Length: 307
Ligand SMILES: NC(=O)c1ccc[n+]([C@@H]2O[C@H](COP(=O)([O-])OP(=O)(O)OC[C@H]3O[C@@H](n4cnc5c(N)ncnc54)[C@H](OP(=O)(O)O)[C@@H]3O)[C@@H](O)[C@H]2O)c1
Image: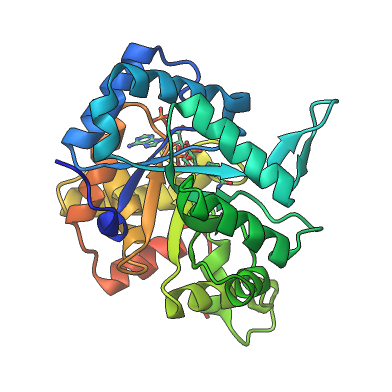
């Protein structure tokens, strides 16, 4: 079955491939096979993940099993680099975007990718220059669709207004251990730190213009500081997850996934797990619908205040 790319918005769970560098090619093939058999057809990569090693390994699987390509939506990112001292910096110049995509295609043994995301905003970014790179990549058939990641409201708006190719996605960190995107929305007009708008506008801007919210590191807290599950720092949250997991006869991960999927019909959750049991639990989140008071109880259980 050849996948119809229009179904990408129906994909609620995405397989993140940031942590596959230690898998053998066979193990990665088995992971991808499991995903596809269980309805996960969308795969998220970046040129930056393990310095291109994740894309390279993914490419090896595709070389051995070319029949998989037609069943996949493949997304990669560009814009984060390491300098000669091994420290990060950002570059969204025309030259870097085009070179990066050509190198990603080579590593993955592909002629085209379905989605390219600009990984993080580059402070020197010129929207016209990015638009020129987008037109070139689309015109040559190298990239079908575009999106951004970790972009603030004004920059998404700027990109949307300045480019005639749609920005369809913003991939952001969001999960019960990292609720910044929605916390300000729920604390509007309060005389508190949470009430000072930083990202609140972004959430509704994306909803209004149907820009898909892709949640990265959905089960981590902080900036990749570890899982929320069974973590003593999140005692109350784990008790509430357990309460609803018992009620719905499911796992804590399924409840945490459902919490995110309820935000909109197009919200997507990127699981980075390579453990089949954990991925299955995440998939189960698609089949639950929490009651509204339960959603808010989970929110409060993270220690966040509701006015
Ligand atoms: N755009 C960006 O800037 C950006 C940044 C970072 C990541 N990403 C994307 O987001 C993807 C996911 O990121 P991630 O791997 O950090 O996040 P994650 O999927 O939230 O995984 C975080 C932790 O949660 C654990 N976990 C997951 N499911 C579990 C379950 N059912 N039960 C118990 N523990 C569970 C994982 O353990 P196990 O691994 O043992 O299952 C892992 O330790 C990446 O692969 C990448 O594609 C994007």
